[in-house]
Image (cartoon, rainbow, N blue to C red; front, side, top):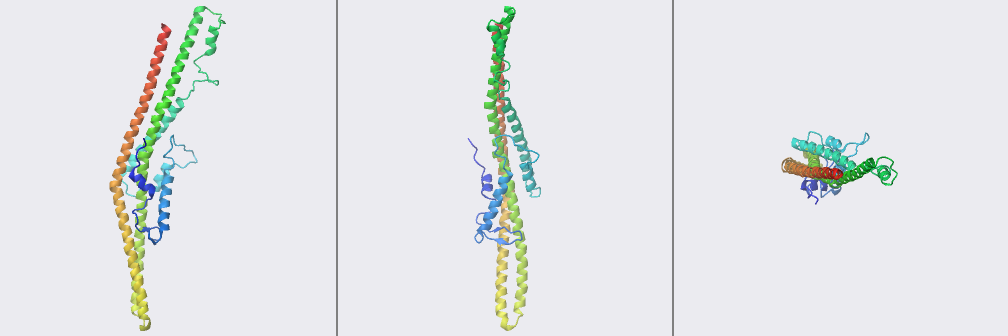
Length: 330
């Protein structure tokens, strides 16, 4: 059965915003975009986050080895480059990610090896096993043999033994392909979906929250500068002529209130982003590390099951060969 999806991974796939219903700073110049006032900005932010996550994980769900060429961008490196080293993420996350990636690549190589080995590579172009030697067996049995009878009997006996051994080899390889490779593929999926994806989701959430925090800080600076300008305008309005004073003061006061409101909202955004970052660096990081460790343990158990299938296949081959040799000597 598929393992339940990590809450952290589900949260990242829904969108990397810091809080539901909260105002969102989306513009590079620090302009505020409230979720209630500018839903398109919030949707754009969520779409960008989801696209980045999908791009960074495009190969995680493959059942087999990752196929990279000279012209292919390695998604692991692309993700790590985008995340960078200055987000303050716990170093244990990067270490766990490296371990799981190495385990994933090792499983890919081993499963590809056994998948190839399980194919009937011992057959010739007509599908006959090279060890069967059918022509030799027929030559002895059809009366065309011109050598000594004892030699013909020995040749026929050897051909029969080789047929039995070849069939045992075929059965052993098929067993490895059916059981061992299946266990290795299950281990690969567990590493990718239960471990690596969760760690990448955490990093994507931290990146998104950090971007929002920086945007909120820019918005605070912009709104603070606007408030200072409004205060200067208010002072000028108070010194205006009596005919213009009342209207000018009213306009400047309204602008000052709007700037103070922008400061309040921007500071609220920054506070929420700080809270989200604190949560991500704390309980969310611990959750992701636990999930990664669980995925590693479960994947290694699958690898052990695959190794046991290989051992059983070779054990059956050895026993079968021993029986064939014993029957030959009887």
